[in-house]
Each structure stands twice: as structure tokens, then as C-alpha cells.
Image (cartoon, rainbow, N blue to C red; front, side, top):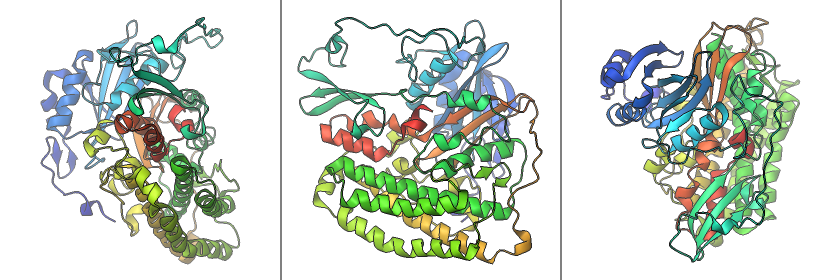
Amino acid sequence: MSLKEHHPDVVDDVGVTEDGLDGDAIADLLGDNVIGREQHINAPGFVIRPDAVEDVLRTLKQEAGFDHLSCLTGQQYSDRYESIYHMRKYDDPTHEVSIVVPSPRDDPHNQSAASVYDTAIWQEREAYDLVGIDYDDHPDLRRILLPDTWQGHPLTDDFNQDQPQVVSLRKHANPLEQDTNHPDDPDTMLVNIGPHHPATHGVLHLKTVLDGEQVASVEPDIGYLHRCEEQMCQNGTYRHQIMPYPDRWDYISAGMLNEWAYARAAEDLADIEVPEYAQVIRTMAAEQSRIAAHMLALATFALDVYGDFTAIFQYAMRDREETIKLLEDLSGQRIMFNYFRLGGVAWDLPEPREEYFETCREFLAGLPDKLDEYHDLLTSNEIFQMRTVDTGILPPERAKEYGATGPVARGSGIDYDLRRDDPYGYYDELDWNVVTEEGCDNFSRVLVRMREVEESARIIEQCVDLLEEWPEDEREIQANVPRTLRPDPDTEIYRAVEAAKGELGIYIRSDGTDKPARFKIRSPCFCNLQTLEEMAEGEYIPDLIAALGSLDIVLGEVDR
């Protein structure tokens, strides 16, 4: 595939030339709001005044086409705090800018971006919660991952880890007395869905306000599975200690994709070039993970919408198991693979290779008939159609506002896939298609995942063909990586891959040591979950459950 198939060589947007972004033109566009310039590995950085965030981001969005607030990173320095808004374009994610907002160490705050991008509401709440930065004029600035009673901010250097955290209980508290967003309507009712409920796909609490049988509002309450993975990675060394952690973010068989997100960021940070042979193995393993993840998404969604724990759930688990076996043969593990290494992969294909190739081909040969079974059992099922067609509507413009990616975005007709649009691995050398559906509903999101399984199978088959014919003396699985990596101080990078759920990105800032000074995880599930209220408002209670299931979230990645 080629970028030219999707994007024109010349774009008329402000600051874009045939050679990429023109940083000077963007600086001129932002005017006096820019007080400094930086150069991150992935993008030019513009340092702006803390009170100019709304003006700068709105200008970039409306006049320069940066309609995707991909990630927000909050961090602390010895003399200041910083918020970094990582900006991209849905039409071309290789066009990136970093908006750097410094604020005083004794009073960290800057203007909120929530009025420009809805996704900033949750992302700024997270930066406030973990780093302690206040966002002026934020519509709902409060903790999001930690309890409201938590003392301190765990990603700051003065956080006391030994301080006891006491959660006070309010005696005889009536949950119905709190604001339910409809104070003038006494007929509304607050219903708690979760946090321990099979329909919430994990420990997720939905504070749902009902008007009769319809959803008036829903607020996802997350954080029950928060483990401060970013702090763990900041305490680990680049080369050896961080790689085992990504498997635990999206732990639904998608570990290879998680590992690649970190590997891509760290390899570009340290200027490591991965051998071509290892790239093909990575691409094959990543698509095997994608199939396994989509199969489980299909199984649990069928269980959500009409309680089918027999045929569809068991069929999908059966086919997921076949993919897991391929990944187990490759990595030695079934879920926590830890197979990628900086510079390549841990080891070569299992011996005898011919048997592994034959097993792969047998699985791929049987997949079309199995997918036909799913269409017979699921998409052609009248009950399933009634539950999913024209329910959970997410218009494309609203999906972009929330930073939705992956099958959630592509189910709303957004033609965005980093495998093609920001190529890595071996994807741009292979023949495959990006899948989109225009329905914007629960049904479309299911169809996208089922069709993506077919495209993943095409990719795997081409990888197997390549690996089978690869010359024996060129089977190099790892680059020559130094035993200890120490990237130059204050080197910054944001890199992302197309994970099973969407854009999984990693921001890293180095400080010259063998451990990151800041490690930020951009979770696609975190951003996608924020769209739930948009999809569920005005729908009936069962449609809320279907909408949540169609997002295919995993709380290990939402909370991290």
C-alpha cells in the first residue's frame, strides 16, 4: 500500500507543503501566542502562553486542519509543569504538532481545551488527577482515576507514597439527593450499573439517569483497575524492564500490539533500525493478536445483546483459541507474550518452521467458512439486527471530537488507520484494505471487526509466504542494540500503532539516564469510552448495554 493512495501529495491546509509541515508558517499563524519553539522527534513543538490554549487549539483546528487531539501529557520539571497537547489530523496523522504549555511550579495551571475538543474533558481530568495541573474553565475538573478523597498527585516528585489514604464514609447518604442533571424533573431515577456486573466488561461503574425507560444521561466512573502503569514504566529501564508491562494494558490477547506501541516509540527515540525479517514476524504476530481480540469482542458482544452464551460465544472462543495457539507456539505464552524486543523479536519462528507455516495456513483456510457461520448466526439474526441497527448512533463529527479511533471510528465512516496512514512494520509492502462502515451504529461497529478479521488473514497469509521464502542467511531477528540505552536528555517523542481497539500511543521524554523521565500511555479505550454518553442518550436501557459492548473496551487499558 502507499500513502499516495489515500492522501494527495500537496495539501492546501495552512502550514503544509509537499515536504510536510512548515513550522514557520504555523508559528506565524499562531502569532504572539507562541513564546518559544521546540523540536520533538515526531513533530515541531510550539511553546505557548498558559492563557492562550483555547485560542491556539481552535486556530489549529479550524484554520490548519488539526482536528484530532490525540493525546495530552502532563508532566513536572524541577522548575515548572507542562501540558503537551499532541495534535494530529484524521486525514493525515503524519501531520503532527506538539503544543507545549508551561506553568509555574508553585501554581500549575493553564487554560482548558475542553471548549475546543470534547476529548480534552477526560484527558485534562487525568492530568489534574495524576500530575496536579489545574485547567481553568474546565467544565468538570475533578479526579477521574483515583478516589475523590485521595491526597496528593502520584506522578509528582513530592508525592508521599507512605501517606495513609483514608476514605470517609457518609452516614445515611441518599444517592438520589445528588444532582441528576434533571433537577426540575422528579420522575428521573439514578440507577447504578456496575461496577461488578457482567455487562460492563470489567470493573466499570455507570451512573445512569433514567427518564422512564430511556437514558437521560450516563457517566462512566472509571479507575477501579488503576495500577499507575506509567509510574511503573518510569521506574524501569528502556532495554529490559519496560517491555513486560504493555501486555497488561489490553490483556485481551492483544499483547503483541501493545508491545509494538512501546517498541516503536523507544526505537525511534534511540534511533534503532529493526531488521526487515523481524518486521515481517512482528506484522504477522500483530495481526494474529488482532484476530484474537476481535473474536473475543464478537463473543462478548453477542452475549451482551441477547444473552447467547452457547453457539456464538463458544464458536468465537473456539476460533480465538486457534489464534492463541499460534501465538503460544511463537512466543511461549498465551496472553502475556513478552515477545517483542527493542530492535526486533525475542527469537525466531518455532522449529520446524514448515509445521508452523502449515498450521497457520490451515487456520487461514478455514476462516472464511467460520466467518460465514457468524453472519448466519449473528448479522443475519433478526433479534440481533433489532438490537443493533440504528442504535448507539455516533456521527463522525462527534467521534472526532472525542478522539475516537479504531473500529469505533471506522464504524462511523472515518477512514483512519495508522497501519496505512502512518506506516510502520511491513504494512506498506503488503496488499490489504482499510475497512469502514457508514452506519455509525452498533451494527456497523460489529461489521467492521468481522471484516477486519478477513483483512488480517490476508496480511498473515502474505507474511507467511514471505517468511517461508526468506533466505536462511538473512534471518536476522534483532538489531545490534546497546546493553544500556541512554537517549540524549530532553529528547521527546510520541509514537502510536493501530492496536485492536484503536490508536495506542506512547509519549516518552528522556533525561539522559537508562529510564524515562516521563512515560505517557495514550489508551484508545479511554478515549472511545468517553463517547458512550453521546451514543446512549435518549436510547433505552438495553441499547445502553449494546452501545457499551460495541466499544469493546478493556478496563486494564482504560485505567492503566
